[in-house]
Structure formats: structure tokens, C-alpha cells
Length: 113
Image (cartoon, rainbow, N blue to C red):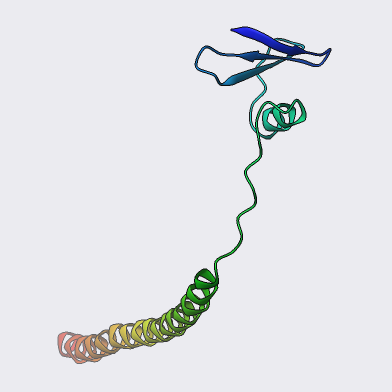
């Protein structure tokens, strides 16, 4: 690696493949946003121009928002249905228990006689 620039805080090296490596004063690699800021400061890389939003993307976003709203309404309807189904299941579970209790009641009376 070839030393390109050096400061008290970091050293910049150019690798054989043309990319840059930045090491801190403690010899640890500096990566991510810090590395990009250092390389931009030394004008070793160029920042890409900011992308302008496309008008078509805005239209797709509004269409997606309406689809999301419809999905949310369906989900809330499904939750209500699930609650009603659970209530019905509980009611059905209690009904056979009452029927068994009344069936057991006379059977017990017959045994006691």
C-alpha cells in the first residue's frame, strides 16, 4: 500500500486495486461515514450528486398508500371476526359442559335411590 496522506489523527493509504484505506492513530481501521468524510476532505473521492425524486415515484407512493389503507381496514375486520369466533368457541365450550352437568345430575340421583 502506498501512503497518500498522513495527519496526527489518521493515515490514508492507496491500495493496489485503487481503493483507499484509512487507519487511525491507534492503527485501527476507520470505516463507514468517518472514512468517507476523510476521503472527501482530501478530495480523493467525489460525492455522488443527490438524486432528484422522480415524478412517477410520487404517484406510485400515493397508490401504495391507498393499498396500505385498504389492507389495514381488512386487517381490522379480520380481528373483529377473530374476536367473534373466539367468543362463539367459548360459548360452545360452556354449553356442552352444562348439558353434561344436567345429564350427570339425574344419574347421580338414580344412584342414590
